[in-house]
Image (tube, rainbow, N blue to C red; front, side, top):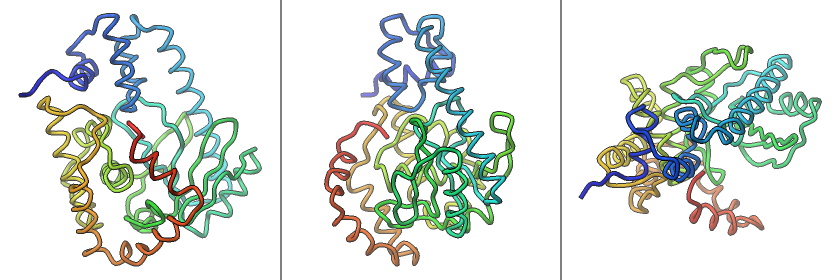
Length: 292
């Protein structure tokens, strides 16, 4: 039987259709945090959780200042890039800044950010992670998991980039239709988890153009898997974050193997990933964590 889940209460609060009590507001704040919706939620109940709202607004301003500085550094260095997993239909504070760029531009980008005080924390195939005072920047050449490429980053940069303003700085970002597809692929292929933020993104921006991008990249399965979960959320059958069933993940991965030559060609990289000293701990953490 469907029920009024915590996720539905959170969704209704975000839509201005529900007003939680003080005790309930604190409990829903934890649900919102797990779903990457804490800022948007606190903005709706700010008079009840005012101190928490002020802290989250401060975190948001800090993140956006840092993001703007990174964008300026990359632009001055002549790097062609696009922010991805960045645009959302509601205000949020990311845990890191994800940037897609050509492999040829990565050395320039790293050099420009090191000049700004960043340090390289991790360097892996398709990803370089830099950190400065707790602010994390991930430079991607391709969306991937376990060193397996599931979308062609160069093609995304050529075909699905537009300009927006970020903290009064002009920035290149993925188009909304591409953002929906990349976010869904990340949730299904890499995280095996669906957040309410993912559903809100799909409900807001999943139009015909996004389906076209999914077909072009052979990832329609991830959109279908995401929408199935989101439909269950809306009907009150499941809460989010929701872990995908193993057979669902296996199904979309199998279809990807059959249809995508780039995915197949990088699939053996999983073996290299697994022999890393800490790969077992990483996998265990990924399988047991509640959110991402």
